Image (cartoon, rainbow, N blue to C red; front, top):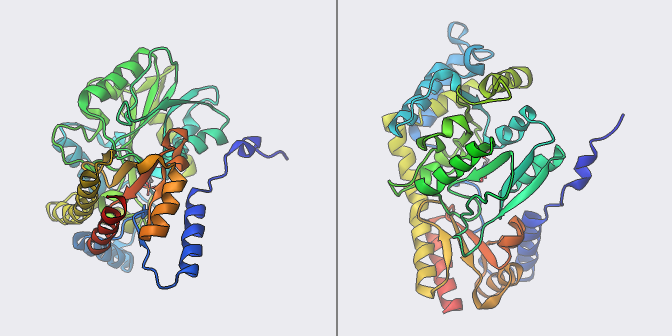
Length: 396
Ligand code: PLP
């Protein structure tokens, strides 16, 4: 028996463990300190009442023989009609018409981002942005694919554009982006779609943060862009939209028009999912189906507004200090340039020791993250306000 040797090519990811260890050591040495974390990458608001009610009803269904549900429906890879219909109607509001067999329900975006690679040969070259959500890199390292990086930096506002000289087969785009919070506009996304079509490449479009988009001119789905149905798959999640990080539900859209080498990608994905996956739980799916109801949307909007309030506080703080940053307006992430020429970890230590505020060093997301720092809007208003006051005082 032989091990997949590609695992030995994975870089150790020390980022969050080092952040955690440094914070614990600081708190141990300074038990009186009140450390505030602007590094939280998980949601903190409770689920919307409409979701909770729907999940309670689903549990009741499971407790009655006549309403009991086992495996999900075979049709549409175990996605229940109520959920698929609600996703279709949410896309219709963006001007995108989908058919039910183009929507695949999952237990979240991370699984689909990794699993969809089953469809593609290991010979493909992959293009990922730098800095990057590490899952795009590690899943391809595990499969032994060649990885190229598209440089995101201060000059391009951390929104790299296609380079015709670069030939890639699979292109990752995450907009609004984690970690940078930057979001592509229509023209920029169109340029990526045109590039993908011209080079017969496939875009894997991660829309996990689309609900944070406030600017009505920004696209919330890649399928709002002409041509995308022929070159893109969109991976979506209820995690940040509706606080489902612990519940687990997401969906991936694979258009029926998307074909490569004579294969329909939606049929391949259906085959892959029905072979290796048995669906997201009924309870999670019923909760998710309540998200895009009138009531559910109002309630999740209130939660997202809560986080937006924090993003506005942090943005106002950075503005008042004259610090360059991306994100914050259409994203829960703010990506700031470290002040006074510090590198990412120097600034981490400086902020922890002098303001008792924690963020995430940008260098942990790729070489272009060096000298940058990620702050998040997932804390409480009170803590975020206090952290901002401390930063104002320290960095003025
Ligand atoms: N994509 C991005 C860019 C993320 O930041 C995350 C989670 O942090 C995910 C996907 C994973 O989402 P899920 O909870 O649906 O697996």
